[in-house]
Length: 165
Image (cartoon, rainbow, N blue to C red; front, side, top):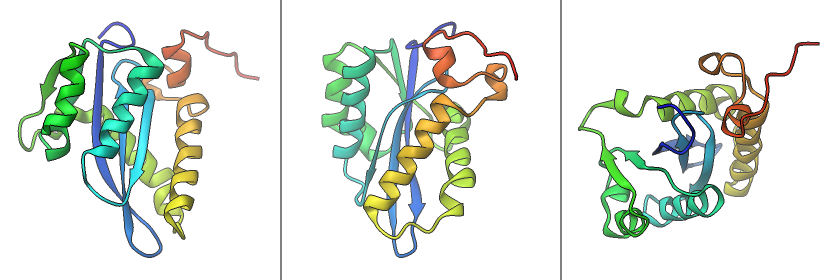
């Protein structure tokens, strides 16, 4: 990978709340680690995954390749139809090959240890709002060692590294 929008990836994770749980899906640019779109849902149907994909496409164009695991949401006719419509190559991980989607797995680790596990969300809207604030922080403020101390936004939008004060 040499630039943004070559490969995007997606995955779903489970997010515990004070009572119950929700699911979080994200579309991530592999080169920059930037979260391009995300959704929270109370069910595992494909609709919230398609919404996130459609938002990413509308806001950022399209990648050459789209990577996911073989979950039923991502293999559904409705989801793959969006990728076919946009003429995006589909790449699916082999069963049990978490390393194929390591960038999204690292995002989940950060989201859970830096946000989710520190908070017991009282409601779905509370979870959605707080996860949204964290993902904005993750993209724009949180430096990434894999990006040379820069943020995903700096790399995605080709912003210069700010000198430390």
